[in-house]
Length: 74
Image (cartoon, rainbow, N blue to C red; front, top):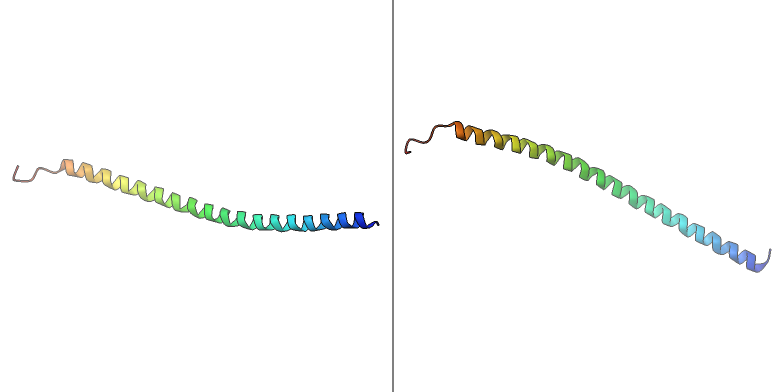
């Protein structure tokens, strides 16, 4: 094998190693982002549920206030 061909193969091996390292780093970053996104989705669903409960409670309070007679000073 000539020195030029051996040098080219070595350069390709170095590039492949760098690409593999980069892919692993990106895969790790993607896994972290995926876990964070799942957590945000769960929190969002919890907040939506709580908001629905608050809206329901407020709607009942508004109707209850209209059903009450006015205070005696009116």
